[in-house]
Image (cartoon, one colour):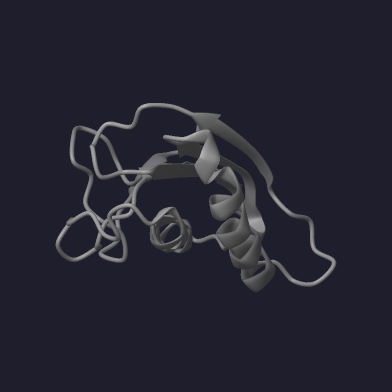
Length: 136
């Protein structure tokens, strides 16, 4: 049986409720949904700016992925939650740049699903979670 390990990092905001930033079991690493928060203070950043919120959120996800022993190259799935359909092209622009920066040319891009929802905190325009397979 493979141990289940909680992943923690100061590079992403602390969880607001009763869940882990990330969990690794064997080669599977799951990152909890992250928002556009400052890792040090937990304050929500960039009100009304979905592009800046997307970048901050992806950086928070990346910090947890790396704390779990993986890289963005190891991510097999991102799930993006947006509050408004109109934000999709703006989020997608930032997401594409992030993937280009973190996946080697010719590399396999992660899968992604985008869902439109009401998020748990009013200032949040975006939330993102991820799953990676760690290849130690």
